[in-house]
Length: 113
Image 1 (spheres, rainbow, N blue to C red):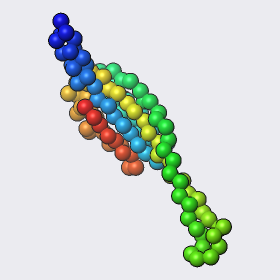
Image 2 (cartoon, one colour):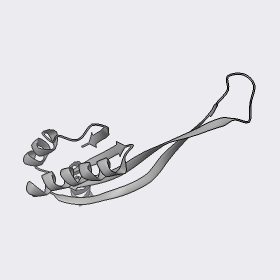
Image 3 (cartoon, rainbow, N blue to C red):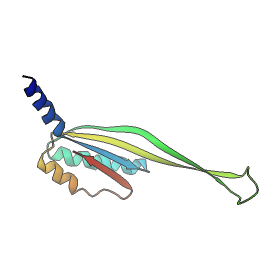
Image 4 (cartoon, rainbow, N blue to C red):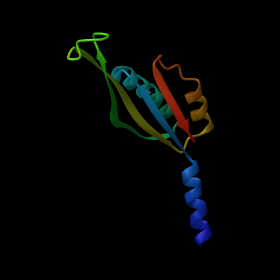
């Protein structure tokens, strides 16, 4: 009885694809998530997400002058937007559709099966 439950949980854990998407521009990341969702829905897989993850902000402070004027500084910030999509019960058509997607430049996609 316990072995049957373990087999079912292992089957359920193996039948999921987790996709993490990162980009500097929020519009591009939304377009990419829309393309991924449409491609996986066409193949009949169920989807959980997109879940927006917190935006990572990196701040850089640089002196304007090379030597003196310590008070004159420039500040820059890089924002990295992230999304998480879970595709449940994917079939071989879903994997083929995801691998043949043409996503815009500047989008990093990480797929875990």
